Length: 171
Image 1 (spheres, rainbow, N blue to C red):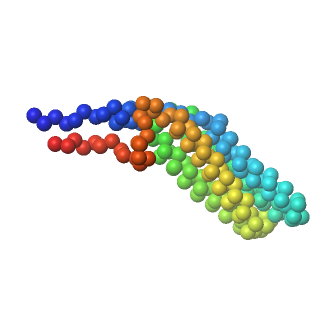
Image 2: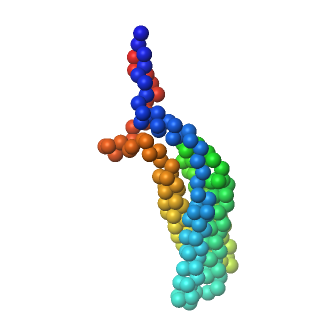
Image 3: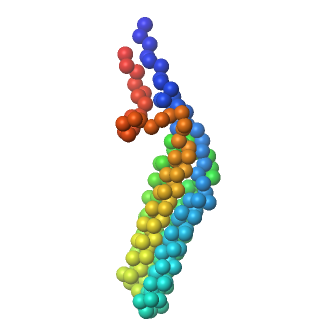
């Protein structure tokens, strides 16, 4: 009789870890999307004061950065990081929330761009800067959260590459 080989401890540990329900740090994720965007908004106001820009240009940039902070907080809330999900599901959910944030934040930035009382094209710079800052800081926090949940009994591959456990039995 040809029996399929028993899965090794590494593959079993990875499968167990992938099915373990975990939560993400809600406060840290909210801070990672709100604070960078607000920092860009404050920097924009400071730059406009130094450069002597008019009020619509200053206000438009601040509103644009604030919009990115609002959308970022809303997408983190929609992500519901306080709800336990399988570890393997979080990357998909986080990527989907990031895609929605990109469309809504940058789409809203284009709507602000079309408002003549906000200074036109100059609104795009703080919106894009705030979005990129949010993306960088949120990615860092998400990666830290995922690293905390990495199973300790499953070492990374020695050669640095990822080899998913095989689901096919060799007969």
